[in-house]
Structures are given as C-alpha cells and as structure tokens.
Length: 608
Figure 1 (cartoon, rainbow, N blue to C red):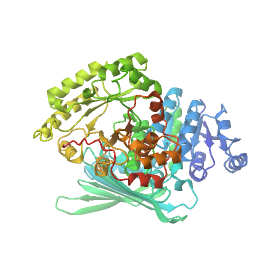
Figure 2: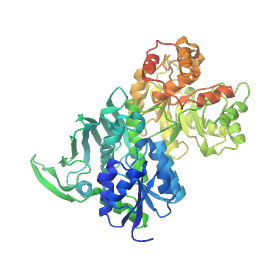
Figure 3: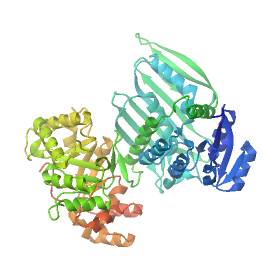
Figure 4: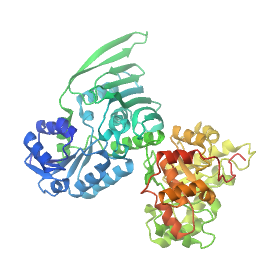
C-alpha cells in the first residue's frame, strides 16, 4: 500500500466542503481522489474547487472505482446505513458523519458488513480527536480534581428554516444533530454503565425536537446532564456551548465550543482542605480536528492503529440516543429494541399462551414459518415441551430465536426459582434463555412476604445472568409499587416489564415510571383479548388505513415505543400481525385512540 490513501467523498454537503475536505487537504497521507454528487455539475465544481482527480455522477459510480480505498460519507442521516453498507461491501474503508445511524439496529448491520468484508468503519466525531479533549482526560486521570461525580454540558444552536434537521424522517432534531456531541463527551469521560435515563423534550408540530434536557445516572454513582436544541433564532450563527466537570477535589469549567480549533482555554479549580480555592487557566493549541481525524483513520487503514472512535463506543452512544428518543416520545416503530446490555429484542413476538391447545407444536412451527423469531412462553402455560420440539424440528439455529419464559408466582424464592428455570430449559431443549421473567409479584393478594420472595428470586436471576444462562432478566405484571422495593436491593436492574397494554388500557402511570427507570415496557394482550378488535372506533380506523383492526392495535403500540407479543393460531393472522412496518398512524389518530375510554381490560390485576 502506498503512503497516501486514495479518498472518495460521497456527497457535496456543507460539512464536507467547509470542514472535512479542507481537513483532508492538510492531512498527511490523504489523496483527494474522487468526489461524487447527485449531479455531475456539482461534483465537477467540487473537483475544480478542491483538486480531486475524478468526479462522478452518483455514488454507485464512485464505489465502482477500484482505485478508491476509503470513502467519507456526509449524506443525510436516514440514508447512512444504505450507502455505508454498499461502500463496505465494495471493500472501501468508511468514515461516516455523525450520527452514523438512525438507531442501534442499523449500526449493528453496518458493523457486521465491515467485519464481513475486512474493512474499517469509524464514526466521524472530529472533536474527540482534539488535544483539548485529551487535556480534559489528562487532568481527570491525574487526579487533580479527584473522583468525577457530576458532568454538565450543553450545545444549543440555531433553528434551520429549510434543512433536513427539521425533518424527523431524515434523522433531524436537536438530539440527533447536536445532542450526540454532548452524549459522546459524557461517555468519553465516564467509564461506567448507565443506571437510568430521564429526559424531556419540546417537539414541534412535525415531531422534531427543538430542545431537550437529559439526566443520566451511572452505576458508579456519577451523574450527568445535558441540554441541547435548535432554539437560538432562525438561520443565525448563534450557538451556546458549555462544559462543567465536578470532582471530589475540584472542578473544570469550559466555554470552548464543540469542534473549536485554534487557541483554546478552560479553567481548573482545586479545593483545599481549609475551604480555599485555587484556579488556573489551561491553554491548549488545537489544530484542525478534521485533519487529526483523517490522519488517525489513515493510520488505521495502514494497520498502524485502531480506530479512536471504537465500535463499542459508537454502539453505546447510539443505544443512549435511542433510549432518550424513546423516553421523549420521538422514536417511531422499529423492528427491534436494544437493551442497555446490547441484547436485541424483536419488536413483535409470538405469544404462546393457549396457542398449542389445538394443534400442539405445529402452531409454533406455523409461527416460525411465518417469520417470528421471538417466542414468548412461561412455565404456567404448560407448552414449553411443544415449543422445544417445534424449534428442534424447524431446523432454525437456536441463536436465531429469542426465547423467553417466566417463573410462576407459586415458585418464588431462591430454590424454587432455580428449579423452575432448569425445568423450563429442559422442556425447551436449551441450555440458556434469551430472557427470563418473574411472572407475577405475589402468590396471593394478601401475601405478606411477597417482597422477600421476589428479592430472593431476583438474586437467583442475577446469578443466572452473570453465568450466561440468561441474556436478559425482567418482570411481568409488576407495577411501580412492586418494582420500587426490588430496586432497593437489586444488583442488576430489571430490563423489561411485560404488562397488559392495549388501546383502552394503557396504564400511563406505569408506562411513565418504567421509562423513567430505564425499563422497557412490553405489551401482552396487545389486541385486548380480541375484544378491542371489534370496537367500532378501531374498526373505522382500520378501514381508513386499509388494515385489519389487529394491525391498527399493534401499530399503535409500536408507535408508542412498546414491543408487542400478540397471539393467534391462524397462520394468516400470524403473517398479518408481522406486516405492520409499512404504514404509520397519524398524530391526530394516535391522539384519538389514546383518549378512548377504558375497554378490553382482562380483569387481571397483580394486587387482586
């Protein structure tokens, strides 16, 4: 390989023209080889302006050029995944503008393509290459301000009157566009898993967040907060950035803008035991962050270094952004949900309660043939053996199926829970479960010892999780007043809570609590025990969208950010229940359905 890497740029965006391409021009080891635009005229203008060797109309033409070794992708967020994967499959190394994906599921597809094709993918956070950020890290690691216990940062910029940032479907909004700077700064300074997330946002009529506030707590006790948005006028140059890092011995204050270059400074204040304070100013000379970023990428391509922005870091940050967007009601339906530990849960699972009574294992085979890869069962359902047989007969790899079971309320307690788990695994013909839940919090309505029994069961489930016997642990039919005493002693927080949720019975208080505690809500009986499907208003809504009532009920929940586990024994309806990702219920219709009076409740309540 020659000393210079031949770079191609896919797109003629503003950030490419003003930041990254000039960074390439100054970087050692970069050859500006090819530029592609949607129009040849625009690509030719960039070629003449910056000195590219070749200009192409269309991105496919650039990727077909065997001389191009690496590409920079500054396209709109919603098409990052498509073109990054194409570039990786063309065996090009890729530097993709932040945020690299619309969600973690997309990001995992992109990194999988990178691994399969033996090339490098790195997310473009140029500011993280700055000596300014390294100076902050050096002060923290040197112990000058002690143990960090709180970080606060902000990035607010202008509203854009005509820009993709105002279009939700294009990945616009303050959290995506500038919130990712704040989240990555915090994650680069705090090395600990996130315990919980609290967030709120101002959404405009198009659903785009103009301003958002986020509070994070990490498992090491550190807290962080950030404010982001596009609230400072319209099409102006106004912006506001800040960073405050508090430690046990002092703190750092900085008004340096994200991605700023040149002569930078921030202050470090150290507290003395007698209550005094001494403050010094730190000066940092920061050359082009984009040049540093490109030089680091070149070193990775040559095999001399590993990506500064790692796959693990990008996934952790994307997971955080996903959770924030879910909490503020911004994210729409997605095919899977990613837990904090990286486990992916399909958005639509197959609920197996009573489903095998007629045709046994064949019903589960029908669900697998229809495309379900999430099977939900429980020891109480009495069908684990049929499910185990169906999976074995299907020929589908065990790792391709998400399998969930539950410990019944009469088996709460240490020994009974462990025995129930092992028996479920035996019947299901597996040595591990993808998810294991406590089915109900109480054995009886007046059970005086339910808290202790739940805590004992949870300790067993934590041990099973630590040993790799369970990939995710959670609850079923637990309301906030059941979860709070568990959280007082839990070492691992519940990841999921299955509740009866459907139009006419949304348990809003419980939903808000789960989101505030970072617990994913999941809907059992999402069709309201079939009673809601015949509701006149649901039927009219189905006619309006040309869908079945069941599809309306399921889509409603997915747009609320709630994965569903419907059940049916009909192969036709199994398929229809999966076919809910190619339409969207309008905001007004979501409001109407949300405000329908109570209907369809099963009558089952965990305290009664």
